[in-house]
Length: 90
Image 1: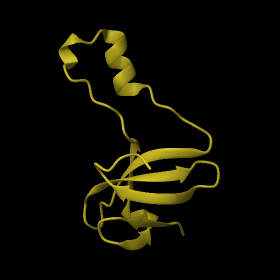
Image 2: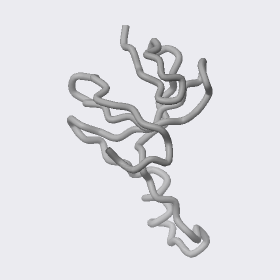
Image 3: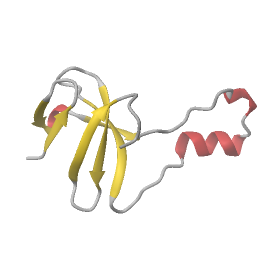
């Protein structure tokens, strides 16, 4: 069983309590109405899919319910660290 540390609850909990929320630190457009269709498509759908270290958003759905960020190695599936949403990339 994979354990994930929730930075809000300060506990390591089983992965079944969490939901993956996509790539972390995606900057939202300031004025979406000014984007071309291609720019809007890129913002909504195009994500990096690296092999190795990756910054991700997760939600502790069966705990505090809050979103947080995590650094996870996509090869080993090991979480290097987790940190609260709004904190800078680590």
